[in-house]
Image (cartoon, rainbow, N blue to C red; front, top):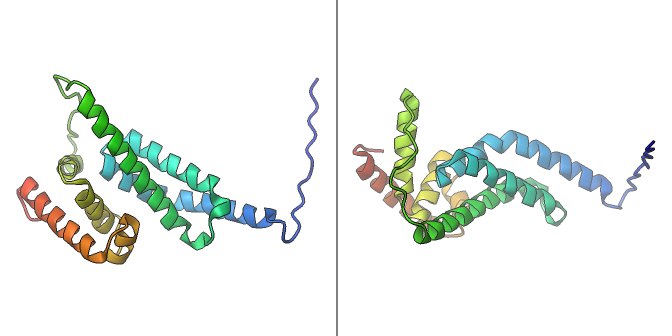
Length: 182
């Protein structure tokens, strides 16, 4: 027979437990509200839903684990977006290294989506993978995630002028790849 005893945890003002519980609740709400948007960003960056789900989940766990260091809880979404972007970059770097050292498969095993909306999405996703990393990040963050130029620059760690340049070149390249004006 096993007996478990639950000891009450008392949060005294100033001990940090009450503030931590509130922050935990805010982070949980933030994750539930913005999961889909973060997942879409990750999918567009890495072109694989399962990997994108792992990236978003891992980013959230990392943000959650470091919540005690989060100075401004209102910037948690920005911190989470940055974590997703960084995890996607790491995944792309790992893929590049793996691709470099592994032999190519004779047959590609992915089939394009037959649904009307899916074909456009699949074509766009394929075109996005052909863009250089920084252009792809800028286009996805600026036009898909609908971030401002200033916010995109902050997330990417570059100037607003660089974001404008990356977006302009990326959209131009997408237009060439897709054969129509984007």
